[in-house]
Image 1 (cartoon, rainbow, N blue to C red):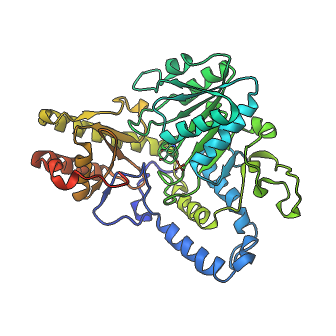
Image 2: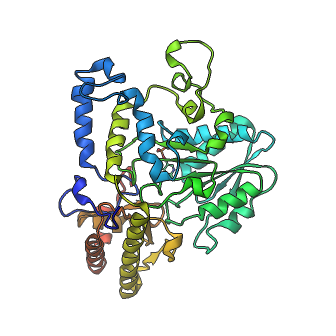
Length: 416
Ligand SMILES: Cc1ncc(COP(=O)(O)O)c(C=O)c1O
């Protein structure tokens, strides 16, 4: 293990680009390019159906059918969890549906789901649908904001004996505000409810310790800080103590204890594997398997230290620029305390969309979230302190030249 986590050479990033959007879509690991080419041309092209068991030039246990378990082993250290507690497949939204239904079935005499008002919209949509389906009630709690208790009081205020599940997005996608996972989990469980974490904006950039936090369930995507590519499969984590009672809503043949027995009755696999539904997405899983190799030998505590240093450097620079251009009303939307912040810095600005577009034109990529947020994600494996300096220089030039007011940036793209 080393404290130097920067490994930009492992990524196929364009020369000179400052990529601060790894919290939306991670950069391409070079290993993914090679792996996908091999899987397509050799494993699929030559090995054809035999690759389910053993692709050409692969070893035993390296069949496509073993991919979900292999990926789970790679994810385990990044989640602070056992590989046997992780299922990989589907999208985060689908994973949320499965876990919200399964969690309600684990608490059959309770009828309330609690979500934070600052949650990612898909979490809210799925929860609303689950409530309609199962006759449950959705209750909102406040987000953690920048409160020093990391949101404990906000969650406590929403708890009572009816709450089955509290499902929270660990890092607020808009502001980067971070829940205090172990403390919040404790108060949720003291009230007899289950605690679920959406880790989309956490894994790969923060130290995540699911076992240590005592949480019950978690989901997360792999296309942000895990760099597995657009639409790559999500993961679901379920604490081992719930495995025997886990009753997911979609019983597919891959979650059957003997899929190739082809029986009409469904006997779920033991453990988290019963969350599997249909044929695993081999190309996407292979890309994910290869993408995770960039974390080989990387200490996640060191990644978090590097992330804090990068966001602190950016915040300090933005503060200086905000003072210099007071008329611009540029302000920090993220918590000022790095302990209460994920690996992103969000800025508020009346012309945030134009600001982001003007920066993109200068080779500094962030993104925009409605109505007034410019977001910048810091992936410590490929973003350096020199990149932060470049981003701040670009921001200074944009503000000085009022480039964000350029009419070219008034029209919004479909994906912002
Ligand atoms: C916190 C969070 N949850 C869920 C999602 C949606 O994930 P998916 O598109 O994999 O369903 C996102 C997407 O950005 C997200 O940021």
